[in-house]
Image (cartoon, rainbow, N blue to C red):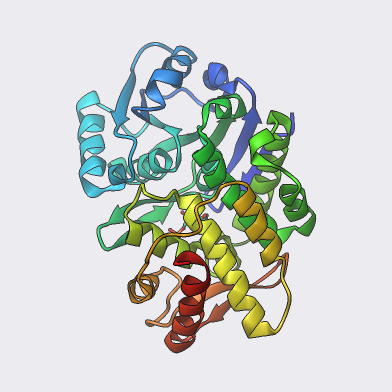
Length: 357
Ligand SMILES: O=C(O)C(=O)C[C@@H](O)[C@H](O)[C@H](O)COP(=O)(O)O
């Protein structure tokens, strides 16, 4: 069955990756909870909420359905979900289940981290992208000045990943999720990278997808076990995110998916790496793969100065100095301080050549 297991500083937890596991959630609970709140969104609810509810003991199971938009990761929804949790009478022996993609997982995880100073929660990802965000305990909401700026490290008690539900995700979501799989491959495993480059997303099989997801999560779990609170090596998981987050917020959340923006960010990080270290990376191969799989790469006229300013509020910046995840080779990531002047030069040529072309 090949489930994975991850050791965190507070407890260890299983990552169950199985088809149709949503019908058996109760069997996976390590204890009896006084009540359970399932937090999901309006897209996922009609598809899978009843399946999960029916798998749980019928008494004291509540649901909260949030809008399926990045705006739900704001302080208003966060407060509203707390209000509902209080009104339902959740106590310190209650459980939260995050049933959905990254927005639901990040929000529900942060609610669990703060409700009565912290209660148990389970991540039930329903997208490919959320293979990444559901593992490792990063929970957060957005501040209007930046993504994920209010949050914590708060690991779930389990990740329950029903890969059968991935059959309903859209092409855009497949592209988004695959960007994070490419990221895991680029920082840790060249053969995994090659395997993805040999895969066409238009004729993707369930078997290929499940294998890639398992490989991606295994890489992530290893890194998180080494450095749970992102003091050093966990930063590698941010490859492509410095520019990716800036593009997402500059274009407005929703016009480009997180993964599509990260894909552009990874190409940029590879270009910077090549120029800085005088090396050759497979960025051309990645570019062609992204083009063949319909990733949006030309973004119209995007303002380099705005991107630069947004990149400066990245969480990896220390004392105002920007740090980027770069590659010395596939599987050999490094953290490098990049001066504002250099970044300006790299970014201007990148936007001229690709994004604004
Ligand atoms: O788990 C991590 O660590 C990651 O960096 C995973 C990222 O892919 C993910 O998008 C994360 O939410 C971004 O982290 P942040 O620290 O930039 O908010």
